[in-house]
Length: 584
Image (cartoon, rainbow, N blue to C red; front, side):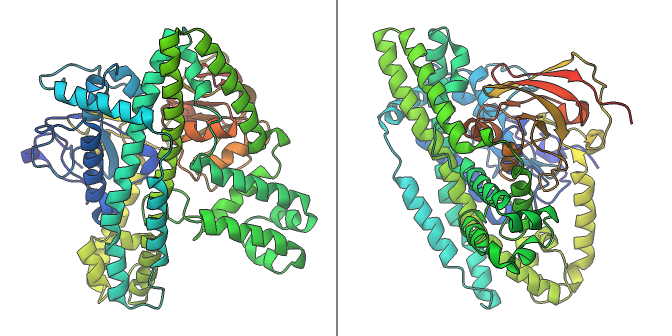
């Protein structure tokens, strides 16, 4: 396997979705996007809406005033988003311009919000980075954000996504109807993704300004508390709903006994128990609302909770034994009170003019933090419709002698997928080759930072590689995610569907978190994540669930032994090894 150079003439793709790095904007990161596409990107998914994502992102930047004529005029389809060796990356070079061009912004603030701790090179100013016209437009955008009290357009987007889902032609529709429906996700995805990026970077602008005011008040550390307990955060809603299901399951002896026998076949066993009828009705309502969520949920080849209920049931099972103080509703009240107290403290340290600005930015931060998560949920809801169409078509391909595993049919390009619906046999050898390459790439850890040249894949670390041994007293300095301190036994979990012995009193140590992970937060006393930043999914959800959280604790899953006792300080971002597990 070779390296991928910024010079397109020397570039050779390794994976079907790869594109050459930009020569104009050469710095890339896995930060933030690693939660969206944590695994190797499947070709069919990327062909259906990868270009739509890039277009939607550019439209959002243009609306904000960041994207100026000439910025991205090299003719490349992909610059802001790219795929190297099968893994999705964000263009840090260009996103950093928000810290350069936005009035009062800083590159350091953008890096912390989106990328976290990394070995990225320091920003070096280049001709054209500063742009007066862009700065004026961004200033007007900030003024617009400060006037925003709600985002009713998000309700319109939700209705559009729900209408697309409702328009699914059904499993008995012919191939043509299902393919047409599947293809129609592209323009819808572009519109919805535009909204998501617009909300995401609007949030970044107002959070950055809020941090500046906190710093001016001598309370830069207050930002963590101000972002906690906001309420109405859609990404936290599934965890709260699972908590209620877990409480109900544990309080019902028949349901609890069925859970004790394991989650495999659980729904079937419960269906045979008259006493479980009420719980099953509640679970059906949960699945109706949240069944589109799950691991790697932006890729249509992955199974959401609707397709693999065992994934959701495993998280509910872990929650059954959690202490009552983990109750999300109680945590929201606690964090809300702490947030209110912090608001008073910061405001009292500011002058009258700054207090006025603080109030405006605090309100805007709330609105756009909620909007960011709601717009994400809306995209996922729409994708669930496309995933349903793909599942039915994949079944038909398998019946004709094609791949038996659904996700393997996402190894096709779109024209190959259509061909396979007629006769998949000629493509079977190529699909097997791609599946083998997928396994090879999936066993590797892609570099977190790419600067101009993608390192040769042969130099990437193995996911099972050894790491430096830790000693009692060693610390990991990460980024503070959610305030609070906890001491517990480290449980290193690498697969959200297999939480192992995670339970009360434990500290979840995870490599990265997408929505399939966050329900496990309620089964633990604290969370430590290898990567992440202040805008990462783990941080946003932990702030609503009241779980002490540290992200960007580089190497935590590889260096902290399972069973070690650790201290986690979610206010300072420090994780300390207190006791090592006994030798086996």
